Length: 116
Image (cartoon, rainbow, N blue to C red; front, top):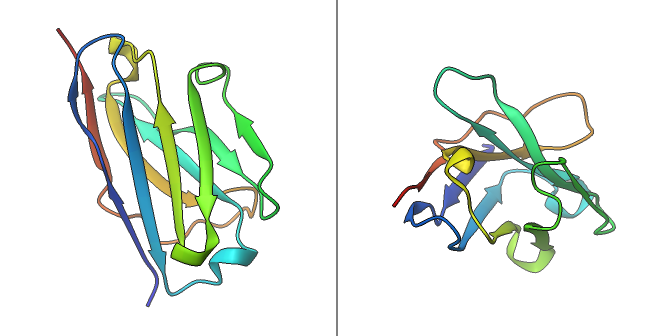
């Protein structure tokens, strides 16, 4: 059974940092490119960052220079380190496949709220 469990979100002030984690099960994690996505209220879900099987990162323009994606294949976990957070980063963050063209069942996501 495929399961994606996101965690690490919360309320943070502008300029603050958070580290999100996504634990995957039921997939060949080491063979999977993984990505972080987000969905803000009233907006479509968008890709924030992706990481290939070999560890090469890719970032949306909004994330470049502020976010870092990484993975630990031994733990079947992908991370998103977010720095210099802005109110416009407020969204529910999800992880899922990246580059495959087919999404896994979405997890519950983790809420990130950037507000003073």
